[in-house]
Amino acid sequence: MSVASKILDIRSSLPASVTLVAVSKFHPAEAITEAYEAGQRIFGESRVQELVAKQQTLPSDIEWHMIGHLQTNKVRAIVPFVSLIHSVDSQRLAECINREAERCNRVIDCLMEVHVAREQTKSGWDTEELQEFVASGALNNLKNIRIRGIMGMATFTEDETIVRADFERLATIKQSLERFFDSSFDTLSMGMSDDYPIAIACGSTMVRIGSSIFGQRVY
Image: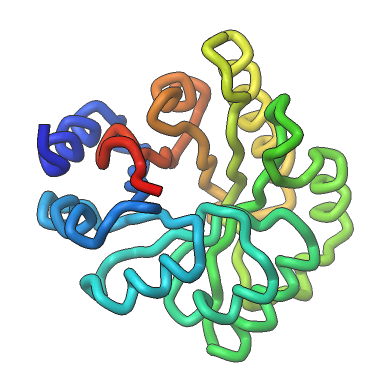
């Protein structure tokens, strides 16, 4: 199947309420162009250097999402154009994005990344730490970022019970934070190629799908 066929196939399987982020990291511009020509406009990258290079050569109406771990010293490079940062995992990073966004006279949409998986290697806020940060009101001082919701990854396992429990926990965390935000806090980014149907059943509004569209990554 071609990239275009896979995009159309996946899109037809998603509810209207779920946004597809085509994860294009490690894939060439040609593959992204094929997805673009099939109507896909939202692409996710995890490395700043790769994201900047692709943004400079591909169509200007693409919405670029930063989905990977973001270091504070790389924020300045993407703030002028990024549409959504999924991976805000600390107060320090939130403050840095806010500062750089202010320099560019932009308000950047962001998601708080929460750690629920059993692997310690995955990044993200500890649930209690995030709830304390949000409840403290510190976000009220960050006028150049807009928190749209949360992002998370399930444990990498074939045990669907564990995966479902992780997604249900993320949905519960989002729900517990809603009282601190307005109606723009509407995004629950969870679910990838192997587990997105479970994520959608648990309330996901945004799925990040790479290998099911582009094939296995070329490192």
